[in-house]
Length: 311
Image (cartoon, rainbow, N blue to C red; front, side):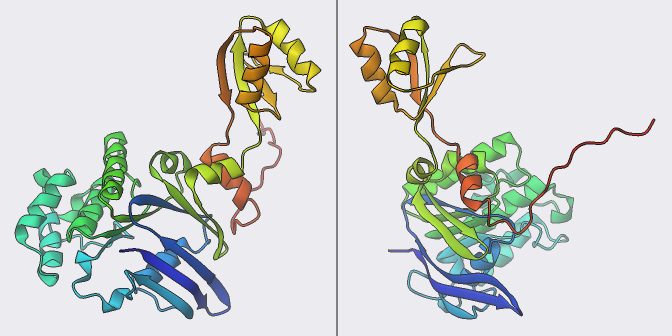
């Protein structure tokens, strides 16, 4: 089994502890979202896994081996950490050919990933002429070059247009279905919720959560329902008798806290009240994430009362 295993990983930069006794595993067959506020240690952890930094203590392995011990590592691990790292004077094709040559990868594979990443038509253009989104696609193409079993992507949607975002989302899902190990760091909560099966959340270098997406959302959601009925008065009375406080919204839907859809549905059925809509309310990933990390952010903004401009 190819997995990323981090055990008691610690990294100090002088007096600053960037990663603090971190332990988790990233398993194959699913997309794992890697979340945390700025300064939480996500990028440092990924660099430690890839052997770009040396840990102060602990270990980070891929398939039981340190990255620096892997022969022809691009065949085992593909990574995108910085889309700006490619040499601007090279063409996209030459950049990939250089990577392929050092890892025993056929030139035909370069042509394939240029096609897959949507860069075939611009493969002979110099990278310095590329937009941010095109550089991002090139970085992803480089990560996929060796058809690795482990893929690590840092902010892969950065700079991509809507078509590109859909492409990378489906690409990640497809790799997970193939049984690959996919770790994706992102600040885009709404986007992460569309592709991640599992979440690892850091705060100030420590592990805050390591849960399936559904369990993470459930753990930060309070019971409540949204409903719509043609007999609002009757249902309101039924719910009030049960100690609940239905609140009518501007859209004609009622919100009821402290109860599940099953409980409301059963109560309504018992009174013969038809329901046109009934759904459990659940925190969004953004809401659940902010609830968990509100005290862990290194950089937070404060709001103040606005002052009128002088005329």
